[in-house]
Length: 84
Image (cartoon, rainbow, N blue to C red; front, side, top):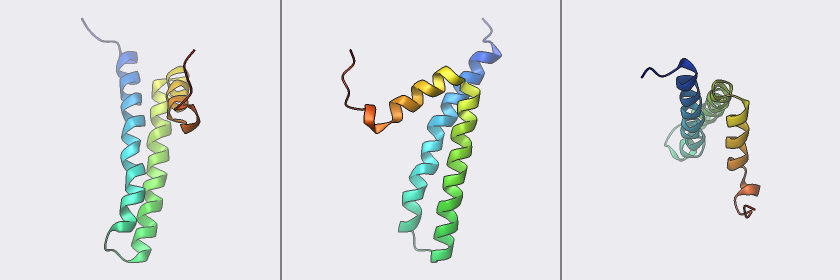
């Protein structure tokens, strides 16, 4: 069986949204490194911008329904709500 390009696009979009978490983690790791302050600021800012670009690109590839569901699950307000 051959998988459709749409199936691959959705999987790639989900992967990119999850992969953006790596750049989010770098925002907290970069200040702990032994680097000049200017490099830390530029690195953390660049990491944030890349994270946003990768996350939104993944959202566009995955589609509105999957993106909205993923975003809702990542909202801390919804973490402890009981499902009904």
